[in-house]
Length: 357
Length: 244
Image (cartoon, rainbow over all chains, first blue to last red):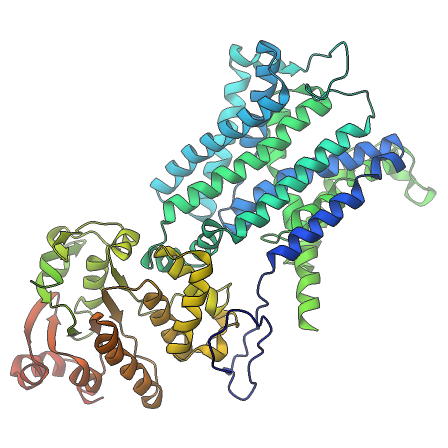
């Protein structure tokens, strides 16, 4: 048994010699299997918009936007343990950069998407550098990310360069065009694009986790001093992570703008956007590959369910009729319940239960 | 020329001189033990040498290269790695991954890193625990993990901060054998802080005694343990420190 091997994932310890505390044997991460599952899910979901009624299709697209935002957030704040309360900054940059390029220079949103990713990554690197340079940790770090997002929001509101508080309407084109990401209302193409972007984002997070930098990141998250002591470049690892996380979330912003045809400073940079990047990950499972997508699947339809409930409540809940804010209450209740009952999130809890068997 | 040269390093915290004008040399392939009563500045000295704290004065030279003020990861990449007295595992991942990350940080490819890690994990005697989550290891396991992780970097100089503390005498013996093998087979130069005098006597070529941040004396293990100043410094507090 003492021969040196590089495989045998399930080498369970001899109970008689295991330490008294009985730590959990960790299964080796099997990245290939995650990628395979992702590919299967992607293929299975392709015909979905052809089966769904238009209303539900819009919900499905919203689920994917939530997932995309949260997958980005999860890279930095889940796997990296650097809690961001300001991912609206990157979502907003993705939205504004692409729309600004489109409106002012007629640049295709696909190119705007790439430029937005670069700008968001650069901005994340800058604020990450500042936050780390001044050794902000925990709540102070989170507050600084929030402050930078707010700064962008106020900057947008007060700057003629981006139309102040008015924001932008995405110009309608005479003909529908893939090159300009514009299709007939209710076209399944929107769903397919969102699906493609989300699947790509999840694949990126899987590949990142198995990369050298991704493994450094987990070490840095677990113990920064120990990581530095063996030669891990802590600052560089964190900055690369933040840049990647920002770039992924910015993609959601670009797509959002093209899908809803409208952005303004609040829609793009408001703090509720940051919360929407956090909630799916927390509900689905922070620092897990599938958590953000599962959380988005729960959160995305909630708006519609609560809106319908307020419009047409069943007899027992008739007092709800015509009131507003139910979705916020449901969000809050859900969050409290998840934190209390499933601190690992839905996926985390399922995974732990499955492992224990 | 000595592999590691520490010259006149000092550092004070709010007026208290934690390390005061300390100098020492370590020859390649030798073992230096550092002893001293609690609060003598041993761990601070390690932090200064390994870059975790920047010295306010003095220089640290590794193989002729001035590494004073290098960030900790640069010091590690330059070939000097330290372990921590209070163990710091990468708690969420397996024992093997802890070591593989360290190997990758030293520039080994991902594939070779897991091979190297498996070998090192066997060598320090953690083989049967290699797939367990590292945060669950008992003290003895964590001490070995600190050592394994440091070895994965293939250091020329290893700074060990109380690797034997908290181990039972039976657990100590294999670790001491491993340290001797590291020097004999791998040519690693060792600097270790230790309270357990039996280990200091057995392993060290020379011993540095710190007291209140200053070098009280240095010399061979025999010279040091028979020096009245050393005995006094120790008898000033718990005499059991010397006895164990």
